[in-house]
Length: 471
Image (cartoon, rainbow, N blue to C red; front, side):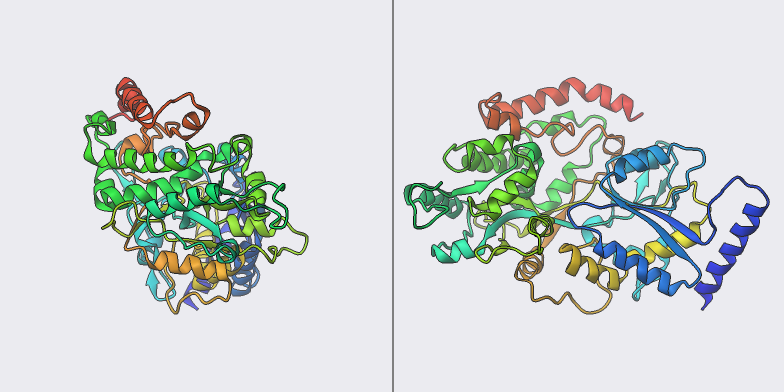
């Protein structure tokens, strides 16, 4: 009851401010929410809105769930009379907005409770440090909460594996052997017609080669260990040499992981040569239609596949699962890279309804909404359930839960370094530095050449990056 009284008091103050002519034309009882509507769909956010409105009679939410959230936020947050109150989006610009002082500090919200846990304790472990943003003055605040804890890796058609008696590979050697066996003993999209197209081991999207990170970074974690990678991410002003895979042991692990990737995708027999020009939806549809057995992708894949049919179901001969990332070394750490460091839940500093906005954020990360996201978005948000566990009869979601349960350690790409927070540096050196597409196109002839290029590019630009970050 105390929280409800605070909400009504906030509304009364807002109404008085409006009558006093403060220039804010917003309805004091309406929250304006902008939410990215992409792979996970919008059913879950519709549920969140309904739950919040039921808990707060007399108040409502004006929801703009759209694929254009990034551009809308970019335009609105620059306005003097920005009317938005809550953002849920995918955009690395959250760091820039925080640095410019355009997001509301949420330090006090971290101490409030949701489902018996303080907000700061409800956040998944891999995000526990990334909620803190340090600016050039040295001050640290929380301006953004994470949204999803995306899971990426090797997705596979379990029905196809079962029908062909293929063992799900547990090591990279077994994975490569399976790929080769599929070439030597081909199967066809029409099993009764050997003139029909043969099934490739992998499908991929050439327009979204960043998806390859989801396996490569898992392998990197296995090789180097999450602790070493997290230490690597402490980018200091004299750390250009970290990005030399020929001298730095931790970065050498990324090179080894990339070499394993290249053993698969550098072999023209293991994937359709037309994949290099395909976007994610075309490649995913080919995978769904049985033209490939596996695909490296993120956990939004299932939900996106449901939209490819009128009745939002998958074909009877297709059953999506995610496999434990095959071990690249025998005693590999059970670690996984978690997607979503570019995502954020935030409140613009310009809001005149801060307490209402914070109350909605608390609803967003409540167990009830986490379960809605799980069952309707078919993914996981970046928060722990306060009570119980996820329950589902969905085969894909069961495999996702099992996959996450098997991970002993997880990590993201976040760094508290000003070089990262200012958008200068990431795990590939520069944000545009991943070498997959150049290797697939043949403009880079080897993985060695790719990492030589990363080393040299970082060395050449490091001084400028340090200067831009005011270090």
